[in-house]
Length: 395
Ligand code: CA
View 1: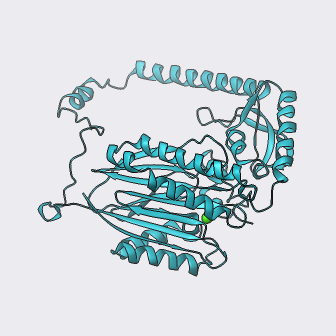
View 2: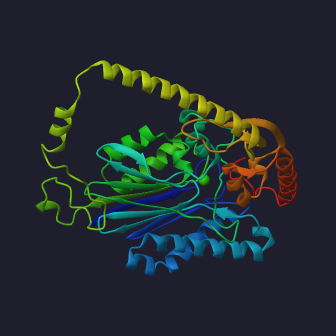
View 3: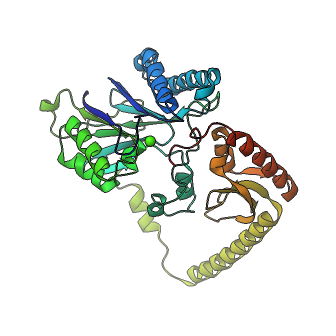
């Protein structure tokens, strides 16, 4: 396994400072998209990248994805400590997305909305999940994916490094093959250029550096509203000349596919199929009755849950609100009903509280929910007294 890399970062058309950082330290690659007032965002992303590069040896030699999480936690602590020590840096934060290539595996670790994509056989697929309010709403079916780009709350991030002493890191590992391209980018690219256009560039431009430059140029052409960072990592086979286009074998630790024994099971099933008969019709009637009863039971249970469960969550316009029902869907059923919308938006809260509220904080009664909202309003007021510019990435 061999890699060829292209990388570039650009301030864009609107910003004064480039708060993005990235590094290419084969086989480890990373990007960080900082946020905060004045130079704080730049300091946050630079601190992340420098801390990770300085401590990467163990993660690289072990090839263990958990070590990547530990690296990001270490970067989180470094930023958190800096932010505590200097008043001007309070509230600064950064995203972080890491890619480690180990043999035929790609390990990804990330926090925030800097994306990793896999481009394979002409298809582009995002392989990280954005830690944003709109991504969560799309996942929960409350917002159509095509509406996410226009949503007024689209820049609200629910998880970032530097704002809390502890951080949850998402990990993912996938097999990679000769010809795969991995793309890491900040939202200055993914927010300005759609996936189809990104895929087209990756399809047409084979040189990774020229592909990275072309993507940055397109983001600038679309308005360049944010800093833009792009890392393109091409995976090639060491013994490329010896292969015939066949995919290399999976690593022995990878999942194995089960191959059914030919002719055994499928034939048995076919010969055992009953002919249509009276018993078949009776089965149909019984099934129908059971389905109706189950539906009634589910409806009754749903009504019960709606009337007896409470939580504090986020309404579709981004406000903190009290709901009856459950924050999560059960069997595809949406069991929540908005009961009271508060004065505060999710983005008014300190970032370490946003994930909990977006997940939905379950409580025992409406009164208890109201108490939690009062408490959150207080936290929002305290948070609002911090220097402006430290709370949001975009205006
Ligand atoms: Ca950004």
